[in-house]
Length: 289
Image 1: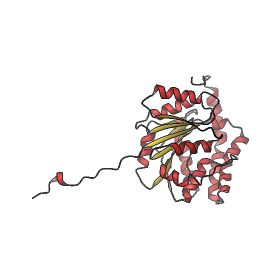
Image 2: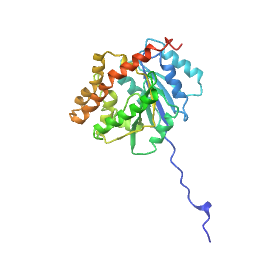
Image 3: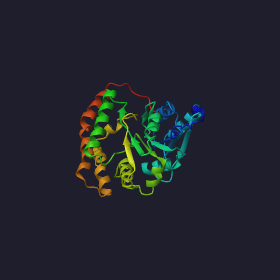
Image 4: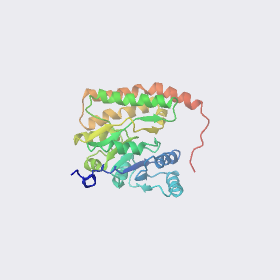
C-alpha cells in the first residue's frame, strides 16, 4: 500500500531573523529625516528603528518625534544618551537597547537601499555569520552607480590585502547578531581619547572570539561624502586611526597597513569630484523642520 503523503513529516524553513536598526545621532537635523525615512520604506519592515540622540543642541530629537507621529505604524524609538558625549557610548547604548535577533548599525547620514533589511535577513540565515558589512554609494557625489562599483572593488581589495585574515566592518553599513554583540561588548574599547576606528575595533574583537564577519555586496547603503570636506591634515588624522586601532590591539602585521594607504590614496581625486559636484548644485535648505 503506498505511503500516505499526508502522513509524511514536513519540514519548514527556520523563521527569518528580526532586524533592529540603530542610528547614533549628534546634531544631525540636516540628515536625520531622510535617514529614518529610508529605514521606514523597506521591502521587509525593520523590527525597530532606534535613534539614539547624544546631547544634540539642534532639532534632531524633535524631527524624530515628528516622524514617529507621521508614521505611527512604524516602530520608531527615540532614545537619549546624555551621560557622556561620544559615538561609542551612544552606539553601545543603542546596541544594548535593541531587541532584534540582528542589530543593524548605520550613521545618521546613511540612506539604506529599499531591500537592505531583506538582504541582512538573507545573510543571517547562515548560522555561521555573526556580523555583516556591505558597500556604500555616495549620494552627494557624481556618477553614483560607478562610485558604488568602485567602493565595492576597494572593499574587496582591502579584504584581499589583509590576506583574508580580517573582514572589516564599516560603521555606516553593518549588522551584528545580538548574541555576538553580547559576547564582545564588555571587551570593546571605549576610546576616551577618540583616536581609533570604532568599527575596526569591533571587527578585531569579533576576530578574537572567532566570530565570522561576512562581506555582502548586495547589502547597500548610501552615505554622504561630507568627510571629504575635511582638510588634508584632518583627513590624514582620520585615516591614521587605522594604525592607532591596530596598535591598541598589539597588531603589527604589515598586511593590515594596506587599508590605511588605500583609503588615503582615494582622497584627492574624490575631493576634486566632490568640489566640482558641489559647485554645480543649487543651495540646499537645511534644517528639516
